[in-house]
Length: 158
Image (cartoon, rainbow, N blue to C red; front, side):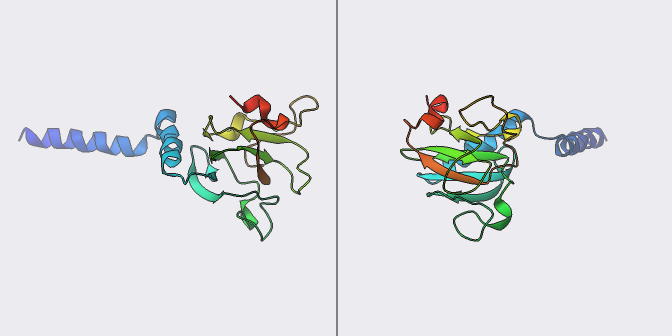
């Protein structure tokens, strides 16, 4: 008879664990795990924070995530909430616009940083004035690889 209350208590705790959301530390582990599993020389983008819901990956650049060519296509534009850089020799520059002029607001992700698990607090900037080019979360429309010495991403290099 004493086993029944112990079993019920165990089931209640297990149920509570299923209801309580993951902590930030647990969720951030998703980016760390994804980084470990990522192919060397690639960048990855995820629809949700903490590297959840893979949008796509690329070893090249893509000047328009919303068109039908390149590694990112159609509905991928303005959907990324976390990004990962496992590039070999280059940093990543992400833009809120499209086109190969690579102008406008951008953020960078260095190889040393490895990933940005939540873009909610990141803002695009253009290196010419205040950093108020808009929030980066759900606003990335293109990306390219840049040299670690590129002035546009120098502030992120370590």
